[in-house]
Length: 124
Ligand SMILES: [Zn+2]
Image (cartoon, rainbow, N blue to C red; front, top):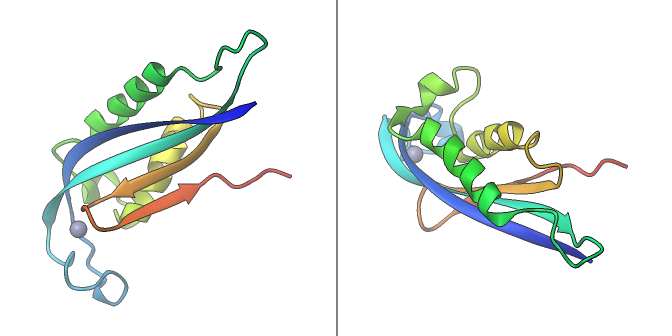
């Protein structure tokens, strides 16, 4: 039987998305958000009905990564790509994929109204 384990953590960080054509004027000047990140990991039940993904470990690892972002200027942390929610989700996926084989998706909220989810591509 398969299941999905989810964990959330938050951090406060600033960013600036200068390209108004793509991101609109709302994020054109440097400003802060209270970012929330949710990761989802697919797991399977072992022969004794024991899950192979430990929820507390998942939450702890996500919290470690979020602490690295807390209080930071994301433009300095992500000099190659714009620090949009999409790219923050991608970077989180890259950071966590080696810790969790079944990492399925990363969702990022920069406000309460919208979120972005990046899903791991299926390997045929
Ligand atoms: Zn913004």
